[in-house]
Every structure is written in C-alpha cells, then in structure tokens.
Image (cartoon, rainbow, N blue to C red; front, side, top):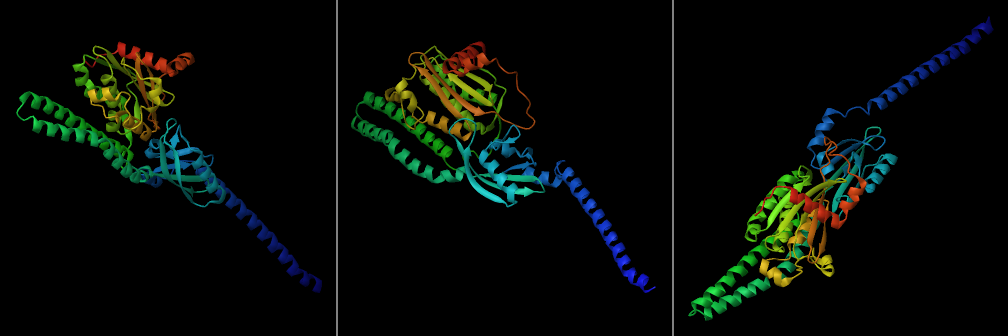
Length: 417
C-alpha cells in the first residue's frame, strides 16, 4: 500500500510533463503557421495608407520586395533616374540596400550618381534606406544637386561678366565720344548711331545669355520635372527662329518621331533646341535648308538639327561647347553671336540626364544631336517595333544621322520661309 501511494506523485509528474509537451508543441505549430501566413501576406498589395504617403512625398520613394524587385516607385524616382524598367539603376544604392538587409540598421548616405544612361551630367542624392516589415525595404532619395552649385555659379558669374562685358561697353563709350566729336556731321552721326544700336543689341543678348547660363548652373535650374511632349518643344523652337530664317530665305523643316516625351522642363528644352536652330540658320547661306529630326531609340529621344552651312574645322570641334568660344570671331560679330549658345545647350542636356553631340565637315554643314532619356513611366507601353540591326548601325554613325535627318526634313511640311 505504501508503494502505491509513493508512486502517485511520480505518475502525476509524468502526466503533467506530457501535457506541457503537448501544449508547447501546439503553441509552436500555431506560431509557425501565423508567421508563415504573415510572410505569405506581405507580398500582396501595400497598405493603402502607406501608398498615400508615398504618393505625396517630394523625395523619390521606392519599395523593394525580398528579391530587390520594385513593388512601388513614386514619379520622382523615375524622373531622377533612380528606377528604370522597374528596377534600381545604381549599384551604390543596391549596396546600401544589401547592408540594411544584413543587419536591419537604417543607413543614410550622400551619393553623386550619373543623371542618365549617357552624358556627363550627375545628380547628387541624399539616400536613406530603411527596413519596412520582414523583407521589404524602403529607399528615399532627395535631390541635392542644385545646392552644391550655388557657390560655383557665383564665382563663374563674376568672371564671365568681367571678361565679356568690357568689349561692348568699351565700344559704346568710344562710339558715344565719336558721335559727340562729329556733332556737326549728320552722316557720321547717323553711321555711328547705327553702330551704337548694334552694340547695344549685342550687349543685351550677352547679358540675357549670361543670366540664362547662370540660372542653369545655379540652384533652381530645374524646379520641377514633368513629362514634356517633344512635338511642342520642336514646334515652339522652330517658330521662334522663323523670322531670322525668312530674312535669309532659309527653309526650316521638321519631322520624325515627334510624338515622344521626356522628363524635364519645357522652357529649358525649348531654349536648347532654339539655340541649335538659331546657330544652324546663322551659319547657313541664303536659300538653303535647315532640318530638325526626332528619333527615339534605346530609351533616348534624339533631336538632330542639320544645316547646309559652312561647317566646322576638325581642330575646332572639341571646343565648340566651351563658354564664349567662337569658331569665327569675325562672323560671330556679324551674326550677333555671344559664344554662349552651345554652352547653354550642353548644360540643359546634362541637367536632363543626356548629352549633345556633333558631326561637321567644312563645306558640307553640321549636325548637332541633343539626346535626352525618354519618359519611362509605369503606364508606358512599348513604342513602335524594333528596327533592323543594320539600319540602326547606319543611323548611329554621324554621317548616317546627318543623312537620315535631312531625308526626314525633306519629306515633311515646310515651316519656315
């Protein structure tokens, strides 16, 4: 009897241990199922509140899944070139994401990255990467490019003004003194007054272009990036050049893939294309033709301006985009050139993540091609069919671009005189 009584506690302890084990097993299975269900639920749509927050952020915002694929990206992420074809573009940002995934620590870094797939333009981004749930990662990028340029433009502005304004200002002072000395000679007064008017017009154009270049190099050059229809840009630029072209009996034609879009600023793009067309008209002979052709290829919108002018010697082609450089200073004085037009085009291209190239041959004319990344938006479908490889290679050569744009121009409606 004593043996039976003494064995009861042992039996009770054993039963209690079995019960604890069963409860622990059930709890583990329930917890595992809950975590598995949460992991499966996460790849679904983002929370509606989070989506609304991301849509109103001024910074570029990107949400990545566990495989670093883009679940959602805000419009600024596409405009700044952080995301293209639904994937992160820059390896430096991808490396930050990998570090955050490894230890879960929020990281922030200032990165200077290429603005587009071509060209020398860069963008300075303040990038912040943070975990968002179990596997997702949030990437925020703020554009700090303009802030860095402020001091540089202040220095350049003073140098440019002191170097270039002294010539027309000195000429005006000298002409005014000459007019005063020739007050009794109406013919001389009229002649010198006309020269003063030309110098005043040249001075006004120079000041305006220095201001434009300073704005491009300084803060606020591109306050807001929006989809810009290329047709509107080309038509406005050609319309502004029509009066000068008419005075020289020069026909301006345009054509190609005009129904394309880029991210950027409409006014700056018009200024760039207008400068190219103005140059083409200024350096073309009377009764000639200027063509403006648009082509979309490999994610780039190419705007080529072709002229039949005097052309540019090979030894001067490397310097044509420098500020205040003139291939022919005497001709520039005759045409009112300031030497800033192509520099402005170069800065506009860089600020839009693109570049500007040229082909020229003395006696055969020149082709200037402005290349800007096409607008890559989530709802944008494929545009057009793929071209034949041999045709692409031929068009990519400078001579091919010159001929192709000239052919397009010849087949389209004449918009100049």
